Image (cartoon, rainbow, N blue to C red; front, side, top):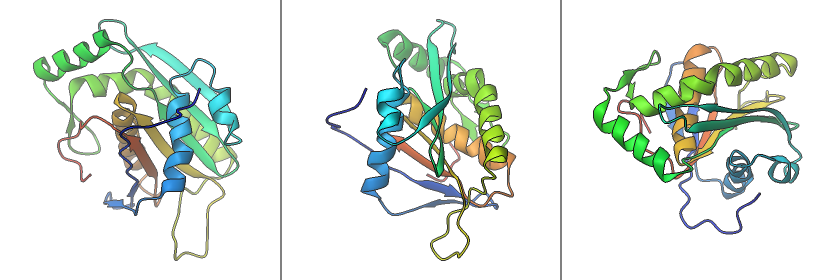
Length: 207
């Protein structure tokens, strides 16, 4: 599965320092196109066509009900020679979109341990699939000794970097996942996040 055209792509790279400060980097077309394939892969039952063009392998694919209508949220973790990529699928059906809107209007926001608050639907959706994804990232980071540090002016570069990405709802989940991961591991210097036309879901984040 791949996209031949993209009409509206919002590209955003977020790095989070050990002090929890969000910093945006300059637009990188090559990087955004590379990770668009991974955002697309999250929609596919067979991720191989999207992943193979980036010499990536699927480590985990998860699909679980994530709301009271039993809509599923999908996520994948993939590995390349220098990246660990987590990608989330976006909204798939009208019913799921309506459910998101209803919960946004009717349910109170949830507080995040990392600070700020988040719309109820996004919080519950990520919670439904986050544990196996988090455990997989943690296992891979130990196996590959990932330092998750990228610095243009640093002499030391990591073996593996980590990326969270997604489209639409998947972009929202990617932003939450990257925030939770950064908060959980404050000693890691930088993590990266790219979204493609994501919902605005955080009320107290520096985007």
